[in-house]
Length: 402
Image 1 (cartoon, rainbow, N blue to C red):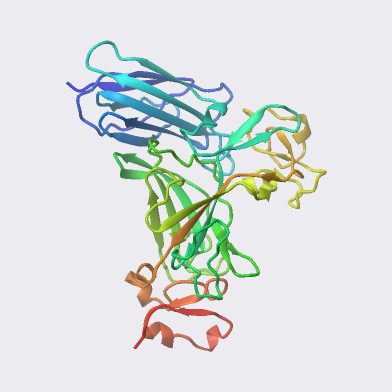
Image 2: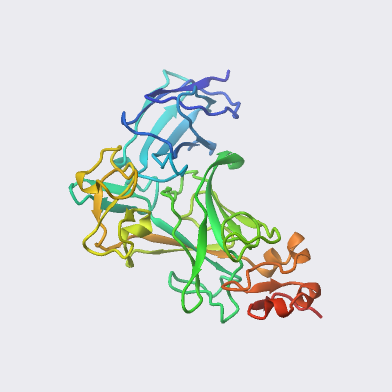
């Protein structure tokens, strides 16, 4: 006999489709959120059965019924919700609310009731991420928890990249092709995806004077995972686009051939390397709060300005935030105080076999923009496409053309 799991929300109801069809037991759950909390940035529910390995992840929506079949066994559950920015349509941003619970579903006896009390303090747990960053408001002693900053590096070969500070250099012909990235949290059943739940804004690769390739910080606040936490995360890396639209556009607004993207899957979150990646952690480099998506009035991070994070304390406006960014609410921070935040750097690899395949070998060049990222040549035809039009461009020869 299969039993339906009903999840009843206090203040919200959520919907999740039912896929599993194994014998189980009805489990009642409640989700308690702050009355003024607005989950415009999305909400995710994850579960894992420690007895048989079954797991799931799904988005949950406001004011909708929820039903799901769960098998017998010892279950773990994780919930993460974000306020986001409704005006900007951003997802997975703002001060997250979290909770983690366990439930033992056995054939005998009554099913336990699980009540999730979502709070920002609950996000400060290794169940959600191996590290967290903490802020303290300038007008408050309360601490606010954010997940680590994340940025990306792309290389053609990761064999010689073994630390946070080691770079793939243009001059050495090591730069990979990716020009922009998105982070996606996927809905899944036992690791089989059934659609994206939430996507980050697009963020670009940037370059230093040494022409090393490191991306902007991802403007998201996502948990990076733990050994049991099935926070299936996908990194979508674009070969020729600086704005995640699949076209080759070395400059904003220009158009070119579709060069596609590579999707890299992290089944347990970004803390654990996926094939073709390496993950490095640093907690010694200091950043201005603007690097965390907190918008100061002065991006130079001078000691005299304050910054506000939208909806940081349930929409309560701090008096020192008044008159800053339009629509900004929350707690104020001293934007002049640089702090050593924990950052995760994901090194991604795109080999010749990744680049020189499919429709890319039929385009003018296989990847790159000819500027920070040299055009990549895979075929004799692409080599012959070099003309006076590209006198100021750089090129990588990716294959033996003989």
